[in-house]
Amino acid sequence: MKLLKVNQLRGDMNTDKENSLGLLLYGFSAAEAGLLKEKTESFHESDIIFLSASEREEFTVKDILNMSEHSFGQALDERFIMFLGFHDDLIMKFMKSFPSNIRRPIFCGLTSSNIEWKVSYLMNHLIEEKRKFEKVSDD
Image 1 (cartoon, rainbow, N blue to C red):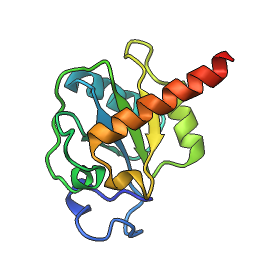
Image 2 (image 1 turned 180 degrees about the horizontal axis):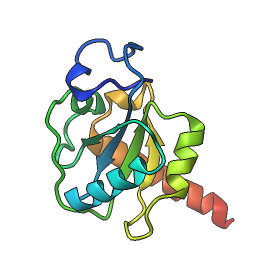
Image 3 (image 1 turned 30 degrees about the vertical axis):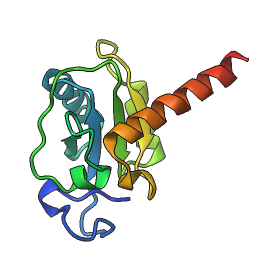
């Protein structure tokens, strides 16, 4: 799914009008988001749009994608980064270059299912998936 600029997200989000990339962050402070933005500028030639789901636990992902204002709250223990419009190579590049001075989140992508989920449900779902994965890895 391609992400349009924040002021163009209203309406048909599947349009190929622009080829913008975005990151939906939950649980990151403004300072951490700034560090991530600096890091992405070093390996991607065009701007990556940073959106915040922080303090919006009862909104759906789709609601947040359609919001024009995004502010970051305090850093949380539970956090995620959702890739919007990224191809696999760029996702791997981002994950490998994730700053070591920022607590690593759970990474995920936007799907036709999770776009309709509330942020609180998505976070719980990601935590459960991580637990299952870690349990299988330990066996």
